[in-house]
Amino acid sequence: MNQQSASSSKNFPIDNLVYDLMMIIAKKSKGLKAMEQYLQDAQNNQRVRDSFEKIRKQDEECIRELTRHLGFLVSQQQSTGGGASR
Image 1: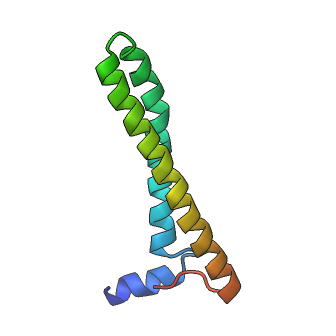
Image 2 (image 1 turned 90 degrees about the vertical axis):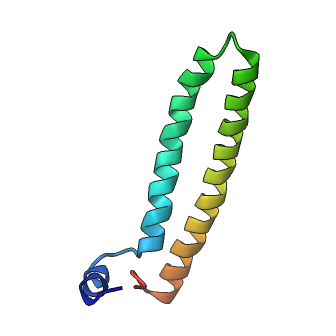
């Protein structure tokens, strides 16, 4: 990390990893919303619909897992009184 990045992250209330997790969760959640339409579009093709369902379930599990990680990191930062760690 260069010095400019280090100094700018000190002014930001969350660290890069927390931000990354939040962005991935948000984007995967938007993808799940879109998946609803894709499932409707595939209603006459069971093979494709099954694949979409499988992907949707995997994405839901990823969101749950990443949310657990996010909760852990946030609680860890709160207990140490720290914001950005980088």
